[in-house]
Length: 207
Image (cartoon, rainbow, N blue to C red):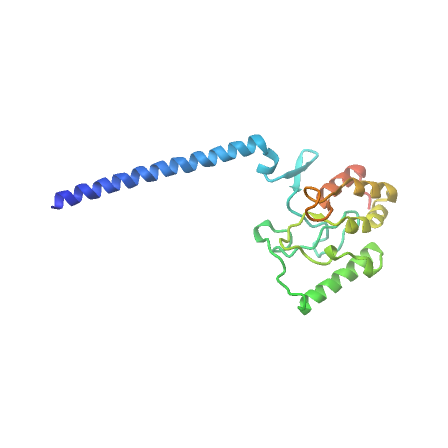
C-alpha cells in the first residue's frame, strides 16, 4: 500500500513539475513575443514615448513636467504645465489626484493662490486664468494644457525671450492638437514639445 501511494505521489509531482516548466516557458516566450512585436510595430510607444532634443532624452510625451523654480515660481521663458498632485509633482510612480473635494477649503485656497501667482506672472487679469491652470488632473501627469492656457502665456514668454509675440503665437498654434479621433475630448497643446520647439527658436535662451 505504501509503495502504491509513493508511486502515485511521484507521478503527481512529475506532472506538476512538467506543468510548471511548460507554463514557465510559455510565459517567457509570450513576454519575448509581445516585446518583439512592440519593438517592431510601435517602437516609440514601447520604449516610453521618449522625447529627444539634440540627441538627448528630455522627457516623455506621456508625462508632464515642471517648468518652475524649485519653490514653484513660474519660469517666464517657458510655457507652464498643468499643476500636478502626483507625489512631489509629475511623479509617474505616484500618479494620483489631490483627492480634495470641491468644498474643501484647502482646494479653494490652492486655486486662489495659483490664480494670483499666475495672474502676476503673466500680467493678466485673474479672471483670465483658465481652469486647467488652477487644478491638477486625475492622474497628475497630464503632458498637455488647453489651447486657451497656452495662448494666455504667449505674451509673457515672448517678453522673457525678447521674441516677436506674433512668432510665439504662431508656434503655439502649430502645436494645437484636435480631439482624439476628431471627437473624443478637447483640443490640447503638448507643453514639452512646445517648449522644445521654443528652445530651437531661441537657442540662446534669452531671458
